[in-house]
Image (cartoon, rainbow, N blue to C red):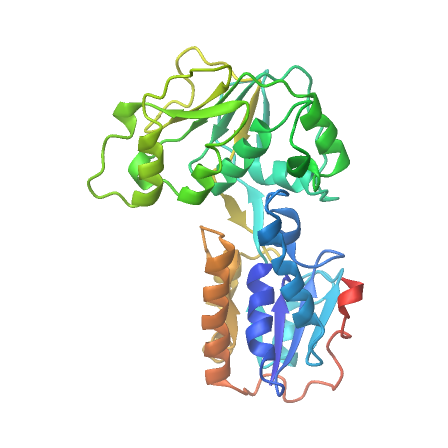
Length: 356
């Protein structure tokens, strides 16, 4: 059986890992970038070295004799989707996330970035270039998810006395900028209620031991507990309610149920939008829309994982679960009539771990 995977981010690599356990299955991975691993390489916070270590697991997958990787190949430009359907029994769309979303704000003199682009810049992504201005003192972070927490944690450790471990893995231009910062206040706001955030409790607790900042919430905004969709995170947020600064640490103020993102006289110098990403398109199509356009005979041979399947959370553990389900479904369907007439040796050459 031959399977093509478009995208070598976590969802694509986990799918390849599960499929490659069967030596009779040939797995060919096509990656638009010149290096693999997508979100894991460029989107994970640079100080989360434990998460980034998953890359070693992916490197081992690439050493399997039945796995091949082709980088620098953009499906839709260098290869047509229809051609891949003709050459493979199954096609897995794992194209990842596309551009990040921005909320419309009337702040013409304020710099606005997305959280994902900021993390990509810190990770040295060659496709992201930022020119941050000087004199940033107050930062507004919009969004109640873990990307927001990553941005807050990294900014809160910025400054001339930033911990070595916090900046060791950050790309040089971003590290210089972080070193120059002297932030006075960070606010984290969103429209949703405190009981229904997408924060992880662990991510929140990582903010409790910061040297120069202290997290704070308003008691009235975190009081509701009935029907809490994220009780663990809510418990941490409630523990910060009414917290009073007893030292020189600066505030990280969390706000909930805010229809207007600004308030209390807070005027930011920088706004970081962490309100999700769009799904990356392939050949101009959103992956699920393209699957829906196929004839029934081809529809069963195309699968989507991760962001391509509309996975809003984008969490790496969730990608692994979804990838296993996709691999199990592919194995259950087995061989098809798709690539029967395809020329042999049509896939990419196998890449060694040293090449990635």
